[in-house]
Length: 163
Image (cartoon, rainbow, N blue to C red; front, top):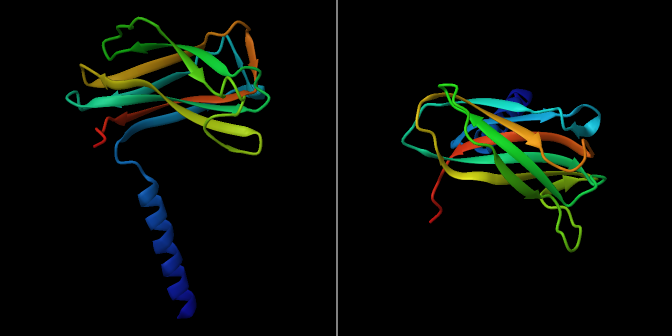
């Protein structure tokens, strides 16, 4: 009977952790790992997500996982957004600061020499039509290989005004 109670308690605690860790505003999140932990200029990760609520505003984030061996404090990324009708929006260039330019300290959270950072790329984005959207990322640095960049991703969440 004691074992049964302990099992139920552990199950309830685990379920509580899972439920509280979920973000009810998140619509989509996916990360893509790069082979050999290097982003080649030819690799253009694409992320397809569904939008149902066209009245809502959405925050679109870019996720980056990098090693401390990454040779730059920033990362230039160009994105294109393709809508449900197939129309491709104009590309937009983003500069993401992965490390403090003065101190060299990595931004984001890290364990060992691996760091994860999530940057708000498109705040309060409006999607006019319901359906599937595809956001494609490409690195826009001055070298073809970016060793130390392990993964990139996209997160889409309903915008919540902070009061």
